[in-house]
Amino acid sequence: MRLYQSTQASQKTILRNKSDRHQCWMLPPHQVIENQEQEDDDLIKPRKLPNPILASHQHRALHQELLFCHRRGVLPRRKPELQCVLEHKQREQRKQREVAIHPPSDLEVKLRTRLQRLQVYELEEQKRSESLKNVPEFVFVRQTLKHNPNSS
Image (tube, rainbow, N blue to C red; front, side, top):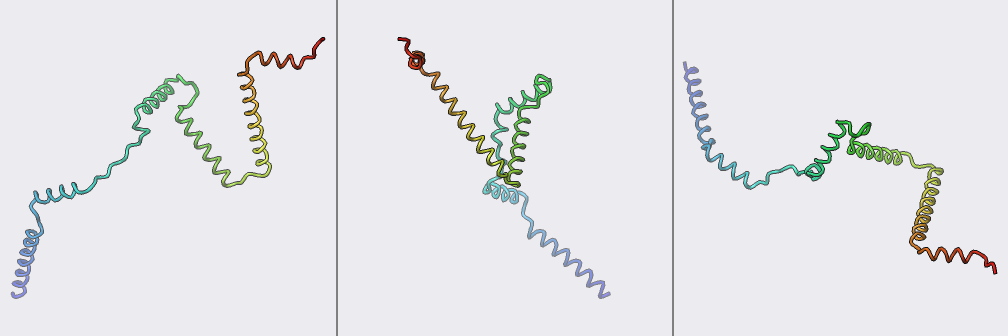
């Protein structure tokens, strides 16, 4: 009997303690909402930054037009321009990785230097031809007369 009374008493104290805890720790709902609002006002809420390329109206319009033309077949047997650019960049990255892994041989280095010299020479020739185009015609005539021997 005593055991039964002690268990009933302990159950009553547990129930009373739970209700005390409930009253002690629970805040009225409007106070909780106000506290959360105050905390939210103090913090800066993170936002995702907009992508300037995707946000651009011109870029989106161009991309839609290119995809539309590609679907209709206006550009026969060609990929969309953006896809071509992406593939080109990927090819360049692959080449750079290969060069980084395998250094160029002596022959490749010499061929590159020769190609660079040829390109410089071609640029100089183009500049000369452009400068000759800008020269008035009477200068050409005079130069040709200087080179012709006099008949007298």
